[in-house]
Image 1 (cartoon, rainbow, N blue to C red):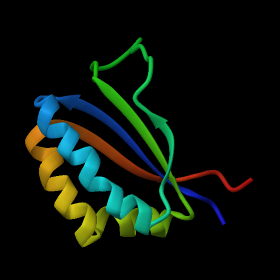
Image 2 (tube, rainbow, N blue to C red):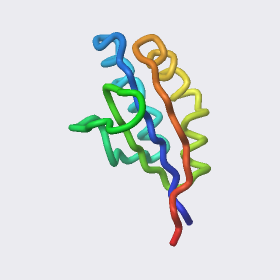
Image 3 (cartoon, one colour):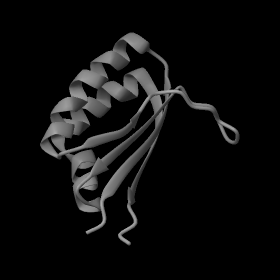
Image 4 (cartoon, rainbow, N blue to C red):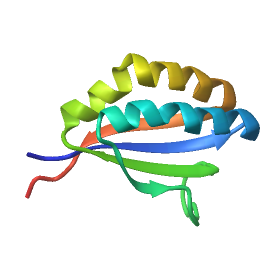
Length: 97
C-alpha cells in the first residue's frame, strides 16, 4: 500500500505562538503514526514564494494522512497554527512502485 504524506510550507507570523502549535500537534501525530521526513532545516526557494519552514510528514496510507488532518486532535492544533502562521498544506499519496 502506498504511504500518505503531508507537505507543508509555512510562513510563521508569531514565533512564540507557533511553539504552542508544535506542542499541540504531537497528540494527533502520535495517534496517527506520523513520521517526520522533513521538519525545518536548511532550504532555498529557487522558484515561487518564499516560506520560513517546510515540513513533510509520512503516514501509513493516504487515508491515514487525511484522517489525521480531519481529526479533532489536529483541528485543535490547527486553530493554533492558524493564529501563528500562514500555511499551505497538501495531502498526497506516495508512489507504490
